[in-house]
Length: 622
Ligand code: SAH
Image 1: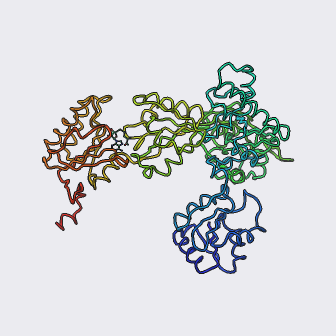
Image 2: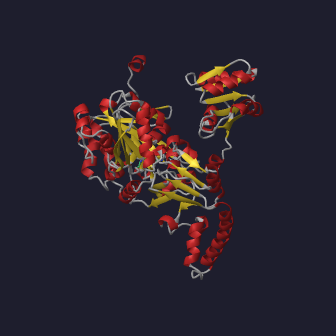
Image 3: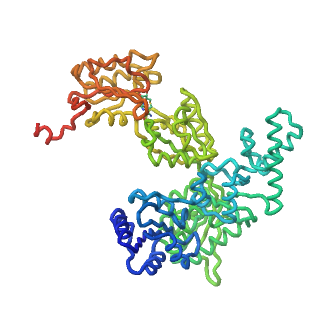
């Protein structure tokens, strides 16, 4: 819930506008401002105060506890010029709220959080728990100082800046191609050791000098506080002074319980099992049990207290999972020889804690648990970029491009969005014709655990990369599809309303499809009187297919049937022409073009192409 507080008449007008825009999400707090802020602060996840920032700072100062529990607060000034994200920029969602408020009111969002302004993902925006020296590590990442990344596994994190890099001494995975200036100090140590006498000319000499400089700086820093480290692990570790620990969602705890087992017994067992194995409870991604225990209060409440979902499985499914410690008791009670171990092991993983029982004093144990570490799952986003214009790129596509650490695509499409990439994004671009290789690369990177965005123009599923990629992919990666505005839609919007009734897209490229198949489909569309959009209509080496296809349509449609020819839709050099089946000049068509042919009802009206919807009221009225 978002609490709204105002003091003046102008503030109340703005407040009411926001309240009516978001009726279900907002609550207006009236009365004296100090008291209203106090109540809203206690009751709401977020606040929008139509007050000066100074006033709000004074009002909330005595109420502040910590970043994790305080609500996000946004201030909007009297003239509605600014929506200032005041506190809780990430955790409290105030940065996003300031943006959302500025969609409704005329104000501009003001965000001062360094990581947002500097285009680096904040450690607290990843959605994973983070501990230790978060501020120091974030500061170092922002300042371009070396931060050694120690990750237990490859997780699908967004791109990190080049100064946050794996420690080559620790795991030897440093990319030899990385720019020396952007490398971590430890790389530099290696570079200096490897090349005491510069052998590669001026550049190598400069790199060695730069390395010495960085080494000197790093030595000063190290003397004071030690290296700056970002660790990604589910292990219980005591962070060093300049170390932050990110907790990946790697663990699943399988749980079994007799009816009526208390939450204290279940949770106590889980916590003891994790602690004894040296594992962090903050890396638990889920609890798992058998369907029959889906409502068992002790288990449900334990999941709630850990803040994780409870996954349940059918007894037959659990019975099929191979486990080290099956037993007769659960078999009799719920129909599977193992609940805790089997539920945790569904889908695979490494059993870190075999079945373990609770140990209540003076009575029989009522709970069991087992802990499994899951393989990280990589993430493949298949993203359509739209026809070219930046404002036809969807916000979701933009988010996914910035969510990725690896971007795979055709070089000309990469150019379309290069400015949106986070620094440190690994770009794997290739030229025309390398579709299979691109698909395979994207899937292989995701299988290696990375967050990958595979991009295509228009919609990535329309004559593009989605199908070859998903034909390669197995179920060990997560796949996210982001739709894009395909060329047919972009062209249709320019032409008028040519797709108002049934329509079909046909690619005239016979590189991968035999011409007989294409011709059969064109003929079917012609006979069925369907509006047709031709993709890949004509290239230098393929010039007879379009006239042939148009002649097939002309067997069933008047010579006066409208035809739209749209080249480079939505791009600065875009053109569009409305002609007819008889009048079209195929030499005006190339591979940057789509050709839209109307059905027998399509008309040119006021210079626009219109395919009637055929509503009754339209025919009655005419
Ligand atoms: N995935 C793309 C289509 C790829 S096939 C999409 O959904 O739009 C390539 C063909 O798409 C081109 O030969 C051309 O016919 C068409 N095309 C792509 N972008 C276009 C644009 N901006 N204007 C006109 N046609 C376009």
